[in-house]
Length: 395
Image (tube, rainbow, N blue to C red; front, side, top):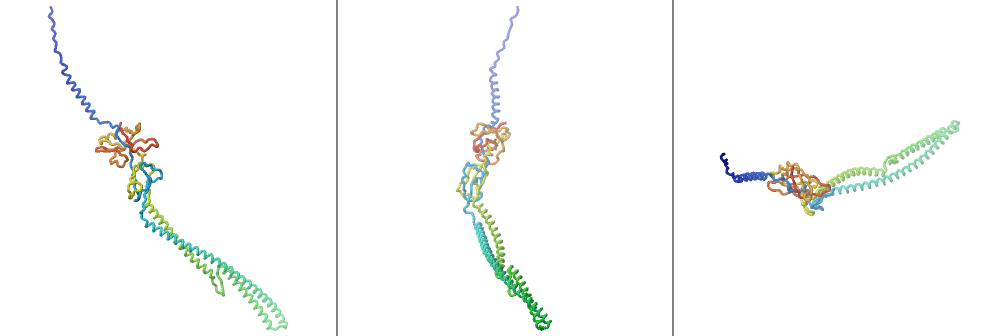
């Protein structure tokens, strides 16, 4: 008979004793993972920012009182001055002196021109008198010439008759009917008549020359050549007119110099008494520092202007996250009131203060400003400066 089979039973394993140790290990691993995730920085999403633009400061070119109708938020139109500066106390001494010099030169020129007009009138009157005198002298010489020609003709006739009488007396003398004395007397009569005719010829030649000289205003009397009184006066007045023309040329030059100086002084006075403050069209008046009626100094800031067409975004972030933001390849902007994101591009880190920008975001210790360019919106879009925005860096 077979012996009975003996089975040994091991005591039961106490597994519950190991459960607390596994739970502790799992808990430790979970805490480690949580700690690792908690050390990773939060993503750069929805960072608060603001739309801004670079400010341009307009300054007064001169000291004076502000004039104009510019207001905050106004957009400048082409050809529209921003403001005017008027200085009623500008120095006028040089301008007044230039005006007085100009007036004296103008009055002196007018006086000389008046003298010239009087001289011209005198010359015209004397010329008429001289012409009348020449006509009278010519008529007188013509009358004398006609009389002399008549006397010459009579002398020629007497010479002809004397020659005939002498020939007849010579025939009678050859026939013995006339004496030698009668012949000599007849020859003397012929010679006398011929000399008288020759004298009249010389007289006619003299009258002809006198007529030519009288046409030039030169007259002869008693063998003495002289110039008529009217012609003398004409010569004297002509010399005075030449001197006056020289004086007029000098005075016209003086007036031209006075006019140039006056124009320069007026331009200089205009620059210091009234000046417009110009700015390119399209800029927006962000803030007026000087209102109409206010007195400003030269080069004092009177307005802050911005160009909305070059608007950009400034965002403040911890200095330790700047490098991460600069490496971002996908920058998106969401402007307040818009449902769609806009693309952006980091331009630079703003090292200095943001005082030169309109509506800059607040910064604190350990924070830096990033300048982000944004895509332009639709044409005719209103100015976005001052609009709140959020920035998300990705990629």
